[in-house]
Length: 245
Ligand code: SAM
Image (cartoon, rainbow, N blue to C red):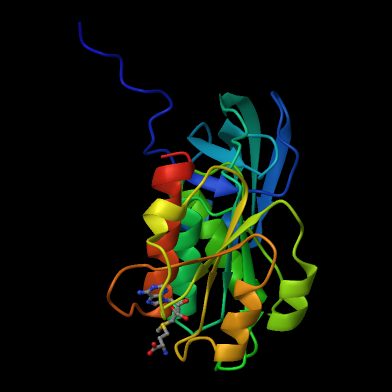
C-alpha cells in the first residue's frame, strides 16, 4: 500500500504573520511579506501557503488578491496544532556580528525557547541589534517548521541576570575549566544553559555562577569550543536527552 504523502506538502511556502488565524478568516500581508509572496514567489490567486503567528498553530491559506504591495488571503484549514516548545533557555555572551546571527538562527532550529544575551566582563560585543535578531528568529522558524517563536531578551549585565533568575530552573554552566560531563549531568525539567564569550568567564564570575542556586557546572569535552559551537553543542545534547528529539 503506497503511503499517502503527508499533506499539506512540506514544500508549501511558510510565512509568519502577526494576525489572528482561524478558519475562514481574511488576512492581509503587506511590506516585505507581500513582496516575498507576490514578487519573489510570484504566487497567484488560488495558490496555497502555510501561515503561523506563534500563537494559533499553523494554517493552510489561499491567495485571494496577489497585489504587489498588499496580498490578501483567506484561511482554509488548520494544518498543525500550536507546539509546546521544550523549556530550554540559552544564556549567552554576545559575540561578533555574523557569528551571533548564526548562533541565534541555529538555536531556533534546535528548539530553544528563549535567548538571554548576558554581558560578562570579557564580553566584546556590548550592544546587540535585537530587531535583526528577531528577524533571524522569524526566518529560522519559517524554515524549520516551528509554530512557536523563540523570544530574545534585551542584553542584561551578568550580575543582574544571575541574581534575577527565576527559581526552579537548572542552570547548566558550560565551564571550560572543567566539570562533570554534560551528558551525565542533564536531568529532566526546565533548564538554562550558560555559555561565555570568546574570552571565557573570569574566575570571579565562574565562582559566582558555581555558588548560585540550581547551578551545575558542566564540561563540553576535552577541547575548547568557540562560544557559538559550545552553545549549540550544549543545546543539542540537552535536546537529545531532555528535549523533544
Ligand atoms: N577563553 C577561554 C579559554 O581559552 O579557555 C575559552 C572560552 S570559549 C571560546 C567560550 C565559552 O564556551 C566558554 O566560556 C564556555 O562557556 C564554553 N566552552 C568552550 N569549550 C568548553 C568546554 N570544553 N567545556 C565547557 N564549556 C566550554
